[in-house]
Length: 252
Image 1 (cartoon, rainbow, N blue to C red):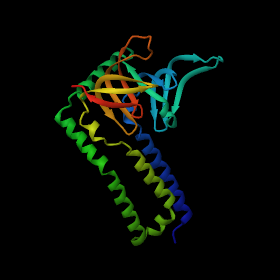
Image 2 (image 1 turned 180 degrees about the horizontal axis):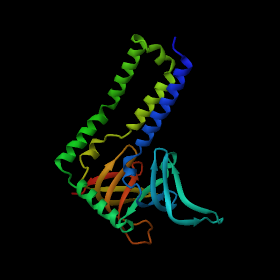
Image 3 (image 1 turned 120 degrees about the horizontal axis):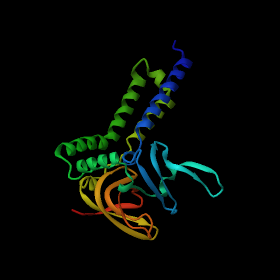
């Protein structure tokens, strides 16, 4: 007779470890492209913060280059924006003149790989997109196999008793594959496009190279961006919410 309590403890430990691993690896890839770079976060509330970017599955953090004091005299060394607050993001801006020499070289390499990508790079992306488009079918197969195992294998009773933890792992797997395949955007990856960005009641246009997109974000390289209206435009790379930014034109 199997020890149900021991099996439950094992399931809890395994579920926790697997879920933590999946969460760690499922950070938004557009945000990850700016990881450890000095970036400026512009929010829809007009709040602006700058710092070195750190990204987790649950949100992002800007590590300030120097200690700040708020209006009450409290020391602040970073700014945290949680994932449920992402709707406040107007743009994440990586200004070229704020990159280190190493960062500038790495960015230039990435731009060369991105702009009019090679056949091999396009093929790799097409293969990745095949897996994205069949993810729902894959999860249906997983559900079918688990249901079959419950009915026909000796482990069926154990799986049934641990439904809560099996479901949790499936939910983490589904969430980790959250990249939304968009055929209209996909065909223009690596091409010059025009981004329309909604700011309040105005729409601004930014020509640049479409680097990537996810379910939530669009990443575009090499735009002329003005953080404040009274400041000159600077060369920058942007990550913007798809809620506020759309690729409107091919710019080749």
